[in-house]
Amino acid sequence: MKHQEEQILIDIKSGKDINLVLREIITTYKERLYWHIRNMLKNHDDTDDVLQNVFIKVYQNISKFKSESKLYSWLYRIATNEAITFLNKQANKKGITNQELSSLLVQNLKADVYYDGDEMQYKLQCAIATLPEKQQLVFNMKYFEDLKYKEISDILGTSEGALKASYHLATKKIEEFIKSN
Amino acid sequence: MSTDKSNSKSGFSIPKNYFEGLEDSVLSRLKTEERTTSGQHGFEVPEGYFEGLEQTVLQRVENKSKVIPLFKRKKVLLLSGIAAAIALLFTLLPDQNNITFKDLKTTEISLYIEEGNIELTDDELISIIGKDIDLTESYEENPVNEEALLDYLSENDIENEIMYLD
Image 1 (cartoon, rainbow over the protein chains, first blue to last red):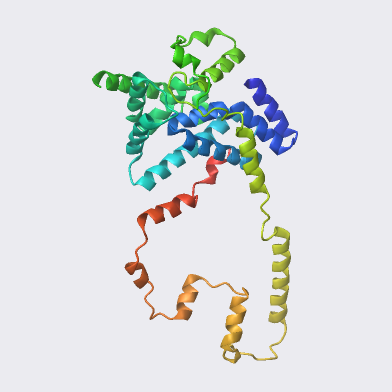
Image 2 (image 1 turned 30 degrees about the horizontal axis):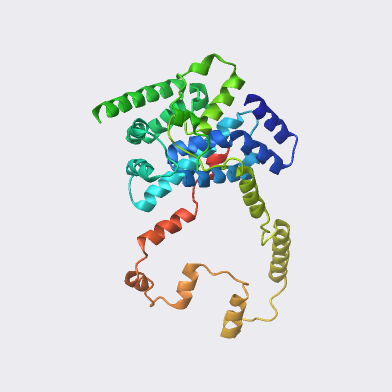
């Protein structure tokens, strides 16, 4: 990953054809960003829409990217912003709160052809949906995406200490939810 | 419908953090592969989804980049330069014709506006049309559907572009 990121940065600096650079970026990051967004949106079609929009935004804003900072954190930040914007719009459209939307998205999983989770996995999703938005994000990134605290910190701009506390709190709440349900 | 589901179907699992000791490159590769299967959370992806993604996005980008701007910056600069020169000419030349607004025919004024020579703001239009027309009347009779309003707001992206600045 590090090697690929370095190569992409060299290509950006050397003024390589933007379409080729975009192709490299998509190939390198599509799966990671897909799962990052999918964990937030739960459903494949919405994730696909948002992911494509993320790459379009990357294409449009690549000139604003400063190579002193890390490419992956910039990409994750765009993906996170796009997914949050999407969720806010959905909640607005339906006239419900973001918390209510979280529960609704998990409820929809039962009828989703692209969800194959067992009872425990579904329960975990229900528990995650009860968490505040930021804790959900931190939990997903740490637990499902296996990102390091340092990486999450780079992406979200939150200190590692605060992230650890947030993750700890999230796991406690999830544990309690699963025990009582 | 799904990608390789061998992990979840067979029930084989990997102890958490098992790979932590291995070299970074191997680790990240294994993690990526693990995530493409439905793995630990049960989410699946349509078959071949990731393979075609580059092409799908690049096609969208190409379609977008083909849009030709209506006004090119250079043209606008040139036109505004000419307009400024004409305005300057009129202010510097002594007023010989003494044409007043009253001398203009209504049809001439409307033609001038129709040709797009002048842009009127809503307020200006209201003052021209007349203040006795109640503009809120039709709104009260046909209130905007709330759903249509939300659709409009969600389609017209007003998010902050600054978020994408590095």
